[in-house]
Image 1 (cartoon, one colour):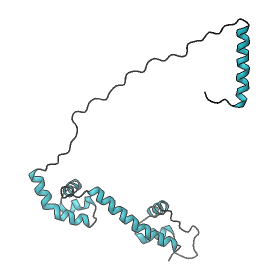
Image 2 (cartoon, one colour; image 1 turned 90 degrees about the vertical axis):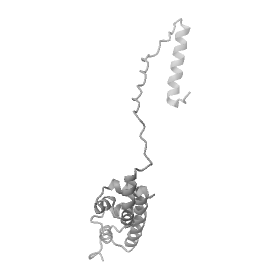
Image 3 (cartoon, rainbow, N blue to C red; image 1 turned 60 degrees about the vertical axis):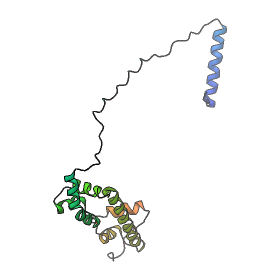
Image 4 (cartoon, rainbow, N blue to C red; image 1 turned 135 degrees about the vertical axis):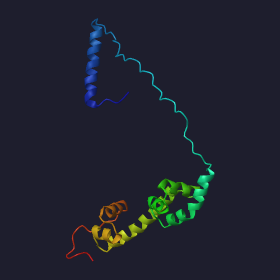
Length: 174
């Protein structure tokens, strides 16, 4: 039973005394049935899937040949950190082809790109930290990093707890 607050305990005791007096005086209390709710409807199961989607690990001979021919160029451009779409445009293929070609050569394009992004972000954070410690503004840091607007620098600074000066300097940033 849940504890009753002190101010409610007195009311509850008074109600219990009144009920006891009523019963002693010959009254009777009937217990009424509680509310009844209709039973929950049976849950409808979603329709069964037609066929589980599976990846084919075996390559057709034609695909394997295309991946073998384009592979060295795709890998070279990928290591130069070009976007997958641009790599595809340079070799005359789609970004999907580039991703599949890299996968055929044992490179997970998305994981590799994520790692490259983490490294690039770590380098940017160090530059941002140096510029903030030197007393420069967020806008100046964005210009130095080649970002057209300061939102990316502001995001990285907030994420890594870097504080920029808030009062303007006399004169322009250096």
